[in-house]
Image (cartoon, rainbow, N blue to C red):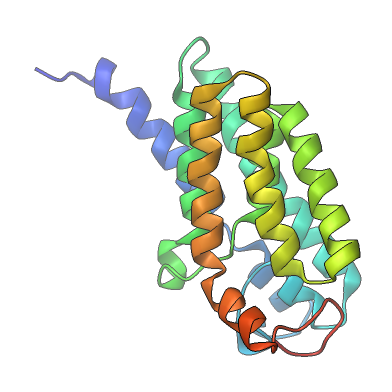
Length: 203
């Protein structure tokens, strides 16, 4: 018989993670700023890159920070509530899925790059440093936000494997594959030569 003592903590970790991850900060901030629905411009995404297309760099930066913070918060709160368990990883997965597929936005959320950075910072900060370095370098070189995000995502499992964390590497590989899936439209535009670079008005 499954009791609450057994099933309760994992269920609460899932709800905690998903609830935090599903907060659409990009949408909330742009509406509070009187800019309307960010999903109606550019790529239609709720992340920092699309918020940047409003011309408000401060809002884009705030979106990036808050999207990262909610991923980190899910992990840190779960770790505090249930120490010496793997529920922090469960909360991380739920937070990531919440950001990608928020129920109150019809399961149409962001692409997960900033939220993944926050999750990595809380779970394995050396991997987060590699992630951030690859993200910045790829963005400076290619000037495609999508390329930078995908490159950074796949740097995480490689960095984790180099540290000897096979289970960690597999978890991060799962995140990276989801990031790749969420960027499939960007990949199509990259191959077609129509993907906008950072600073472009539309894409």
